[in-house]
Length: 88
Image (tube, rainbow, N blue to C red; front, side, top):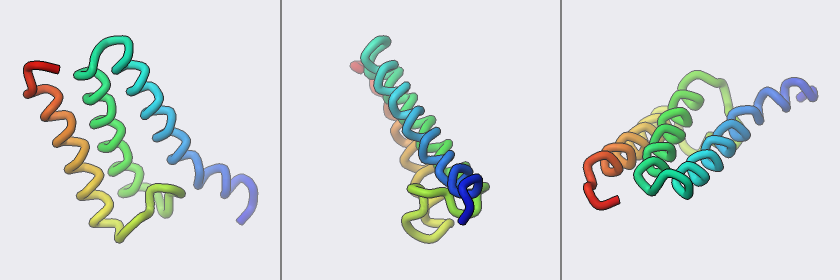
């Protein structure tokens, strides 16, 4: 694997890490609801990365279908709970 291919393959995990960091900062600055919605969005983006990219480093755990379903469902559930829960 050449250096540009390696950099392209690791881009997804770096974007996910940046999204998690932004979500944590958002949670600290704006509240837990905003941070939880951010984490939900990051998980849905993980599902999209897994569906579109060939083999994103750090996101390939199981088969493509199971990864997409689990990332997407977890993101939607976390986001939904963050919106529906009145006390956070």
